[in-house]
Length: 305
Image 1 (cartoon, rainbow, N blue to C red):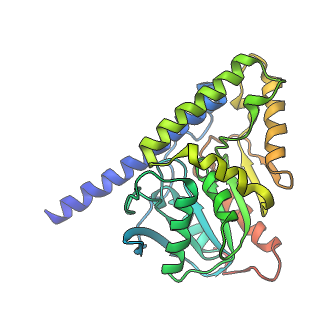
Image 2: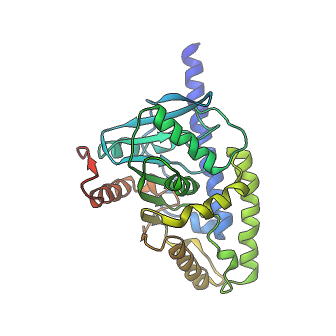
């Protein structure tokens, strides 16, 4: 009977991750203007190795926070999943990155094995992460690898006090404040669609993650004064933005993303879906390794796998 309960719990956890990923994808579809943009190779393939939980729960202000850290070396990589996902979302990357350097995945408040903290802002979730890392005796400096909605947490984590964040690797991240809705080069109907999508996101994130996006947006505005070294791995915007006015939409996106990350390296990855870490885990691991090697003597990665 105990084994049956354990198996059922495992099934529910996996189902929650898949549903969360689907909801996150639906939001990005609404934001970016069309389902066809996301029907790219890899989207419907199996996501690769299943995550095997080997982490611990630590106490943060009387609540449980789950964190799973593996490998050795510095800087420590932090994995931030997309909407509704936690450590379970990183089966394709966790052990591969842990062969390069110390790597930690976690469950945000109210997700997976972590206790809810009620409605909260992104910065409050990041405070939980900082506290959980300290409770688990983990140390920086850090490189954050973030997918989709995880990008907002990566930006906020980089801005908080504590061991420094020396690099960001952003995997097709969700940017709710990119500003394309104010770009006069885009037609009014498309700009209105972006604003409606943001309104929908406020409700969806509140229900799905107890995330207060309205409170988080000003936190993001204050966080971007000094972003660390950043690599952006994105899908092809020509596949994302469809007619009419495809060229104008793509040009506006390039302008907006370069304004957001003026010193970042932008790499468009061909033939992948929104889930780049599912489709090309080898590429993501290689790019993280390259970033660590480029950080200089402070970075001392473990043996490569």
